[in-house]
Image (cartoon, rainbow, N blue to C red; front, side, top):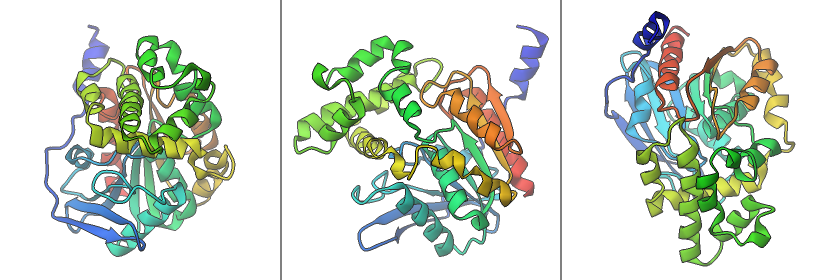
Amino acid sequence: MSTQQQQQQQQLRDLYPQIEPFDTGFLKVDDTHSIYYEQSGNRDGKPVVFLHGGPGGGTSGEDRRYFDPAVYRIVLFDQRGAGKSTPYENNDTWSLVADIEKIRTHLHIPKWVVFGGSWGSTLALAYAQTHPESVKGLILRGIFTLRDSEIQWFYQEGASHVFPDVWEDYLAPIPPTEHGDLVTAYHNRLTGPDTAEQLRCAASWSKWECATSRLFIDPAMLAKSSNPTWSLAFARIESHYFHHRGFFPTPQHILDNVPTIRHHNIPGVIIQGRYDMVCPFRTAWDLHKRWPEAEFVVVEDAGHSAREVGVRSRLVEAADKFRDL
């Protein structure tokens, strides 16, 4: 190992220690939906909201640990149908954007830093473009904007050439006659009446993403896909959003509305694993070109997951940097 490599390893940051919430609750955002939220860290600290991926991934205690608990008032919540939030139905991007704003208002937070990776980056950008006055800064990882090319790459043909062995398991539940549109085929089954078929398709869908999320396949992530409760919520919500292309009016909606963020001088950090198979580098690069003021960080030895050492370190560093906002 070279001296430079040793120095880089020594500079890598770990997560902050485990902490417990000082406040948890459920917010009724409409007549049907109840959204789980929690607060941890410093009650009087600088607010930051964590937007989880998927959609449908839900939050965990690990998600609190990117932020300095002595400085930040850390807000986590489960999006509609994910984690502890119910129900699954009536679920779309613009409802989630409205839910975020309702949580901010409910907690009497004037402005906050918004932190999101993968689908969380999509939602963070959509929220900042809709409510720029509520956003102090953006920390984004594994950029995803739901363009057709991004969906095609991961769910139709692209990543399949890198992981052909796992891809066979992804194809297995779908008849060859429907292989021309796998997202639609999965969506029809995951929302259909056959419970056994729902569970089989949810396991295959979830395994595909869990197997490809890191530079090296992580057995612990694969094991997560075998949990039927988690995998069904995850796969059903993801396929619903992807089938409807994120409910955006145009495929380029997120990128075309970056000028709103720039107009409001919202600072940002974009962190991207070079070998991200789920949300490939192209999208982060396109966002960087549209938003040159944002810091652009490429982690050369990482894939998609926020849990990979290099990505994790850069996320902690970005959150530390925003302590001074």
